[in-house]
Length: 242
Ligand code: SF4
Ligand code: SF4
Image (tube, rainbow, N blue to C red; front, side, top):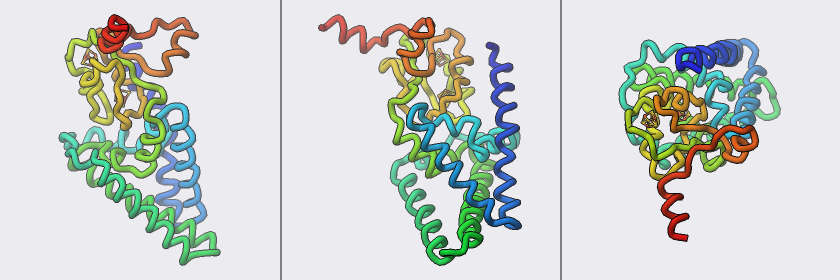
């Protein structure tokens, strides 16, 4: 598939899912019970992580879709500072967010509207922070510190890996087109891209001019008759030494 067609197909899916964001962020201020939809979003991210990594963040997450669709054209698109990829910042954000939600629910209990309002408030504030950071730096910068994205990423380190062959020519097309500003080619000697922030969108697979990238469990690709990526340099050395 051509890159343009692939990107358009992905956008079509995102045009459907992003609508979930205004439903909660705007509608939730009038109907606070809509805030409970956030629990579905959290469960989706974690549930899918059990077998497909951060795939939820690709097009199923309404907020991720919104950032891709609306911030992409107007964002400064600068390099994401390393601090946004640091474990300590992610852990701080997780702690703050879950503490705020917990305290709000504690004080609202047992009023369902009050509890729903807590979710609406948290989603509104975090989305606003994501928009500001997205405009100034990069559309998907929030996704690097998003608590559910972080948890999903840590839960699924080896799930649905992005395989990379060492025939990579280091053209960096994968990095240029990656919505998460990741660089799969840096792991070409390992044979597998190990970054837990990969949202398994497959854009790099299509963008790679020499087709050395492939996504998903190797066993499944073999079952389906798809030629698996050749063994990495590391594996070949290990085999030769055995
Ligand atoms: S590394 Fe590839 S599959 Fe992962 S997020 Fe970037 S473009 Fe998508
Ligand atoms: S696009 Fe393909 S060949 Fe180019 S750097 Fe990425 S993996 Fe290597």
